[in-house]
Every structure is written in structure tokens, then in C-alpha cells.
Image 1 (cartoon, one colour):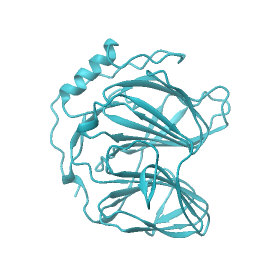
Image 2 (cartoon, helix red, strand yellow):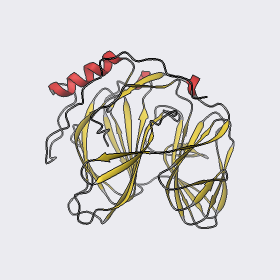
Image 3 (cartoon, one colour):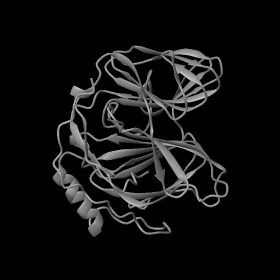
Image 4 (cartoon, helix red, strand yellow):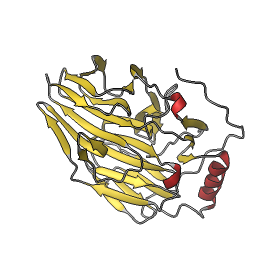
Length: 321
């Protein structure tokens, strides 16, 4: 999924100086962003005051949307570099195409993992015909400097490991949780897990105290460390936790995101993760010139043009706390 903001701002993210080194309960309010004609997303990361959680650098939650008489998701070809995209659905399907020639329909609870590395382009769309409802999350993982120029590749996994307790199933999307490891390729120590809770369930999820964590609410009513979370909100939890208390007031769906704090400072702009403004400028030129990111074939429509790049130097960020 793309950042379709036509006035995309440069932002500095990462660096341990902005990590909360103790357990906290910081409820993040989403920003509503229109994605195409019929899809509105709730953007949780980057957020005012909270840019990353481990290597997780971008989180959009969308739906459930009734798209029975709508085109659904229609994201034209666009470029990525320096990151991985993670597609995760609870309802509906998304058709992925990329400049490597990949063509894959992603269904609920299947992992679509695209590693952009040095350069890739892709499109995402609701297939024709498509299911009535569309509900899911799109996430980005920043690649560390040692791996940000890897060859681009796409992975699709339908069989993912799970950790279970009475009334709770945690499907490991990426990374590792309680000894269960996803087959998806990860380049930093992290975890992404889909939590399904039945009404009345209570559990204490084991965590790594060296990780920072956040929980995205996908559906239903639940309390995370005794904080009520509603769908489309995200609770930042900081570091230093060995377990996380969960309680479901109704059937509920959550996503656990965590990882070692990302040491490196990165620059995010539009659909790029880089280290310098020159990197961003060269990537934008490469996309507009058509000589770096390849061609997505089969999408019915033109590629996205890049927005104008702000011609201002970045300033250091203030500390979150």
C-alpha cells in the first residue's frame, strides 16, 4: 500500500533517544487518510510524537468497508525502497502485482511480504469480482543499513505458526513469539502477531523486555494492560515488559507489534525509507524517469506520479519524553 499524500513531508524516525525505556500506556489517535476513491485508512504510524515501534515504521488500518458496489482498493503502481511491506487481511482479498512479475491474490490471514531493498514498484487492487467486505492492515518495516540495498523479492505464506491459550490464538506474522517463528524473512529482531480473542478470555502474553511494543485494535472490545482499546486505535506500551495482560469484553482482534528499538535514524518520505535527503531526491528522480524501479504490468491505469519534494533541510526532532 502506498502513502498517497500529495504533499508528503520529510520526517526523521528511529534512534534510541526517542524510545520509552519503561512500560507506558500511550494511546495513539489515528489520522484519517483517503486512499483512492473508496478506501479510507486510519494511519497510526508515523504519528505525532510516535514515529516507530522497533523497526515498524508505518501502520494503516482500514475497514471493515462494504465494497459490494464499489471498486474497493485501487492503488496504482508506485515505488518503494529501503523497507518491507506487510499486507494482512481479516476480510476480503487484495491482488498484488510488482515489477518482478509477481501476481498474487492475498486472502485473510495470509502473509504478503514484499522486501523492496534497493528498488521495487507494485500495485494493489481489489480483484474483480471481490468479496463484499474489505478489512485489514498495511504495515512497513524499515530495513537496517546493512540490508537496505538487498535484491527486491516477494513472499507469500499461507501456513503461519500460532501460539494458543484458552480463548486466545496468536498467529505469528513476522518474527518470533514465545518460540514460534514466522517463515517470513525479517532483518531485525521483531515480532508481528495477529491475536484472536473470544469474549471473556483473559491471558498474559509473554514479551521480551528488550523490545518496545504496541497493540493495534482491529475489531471488537478488549482491554490491553487494563486500557480499553477500540478498533482503529493503537496503544504504545514502551519497553521493559515481560508479559502483557489481555482481556476480551467481546470477540476481538488485535495486532501485536514489537521489536528491538531501531538504532539508526532514517528519513521517511512518500514511499521511501532512506538515510539522507540526497537518497530521497535520487529515488524520486529515478521513479519519475522510469529508470530504477521497473514496470508493473497488468494494472489498468497509469502509475502514481511522485509529489513535489520539499526543498528544506531537515531539523532534528524533539524528544517524545
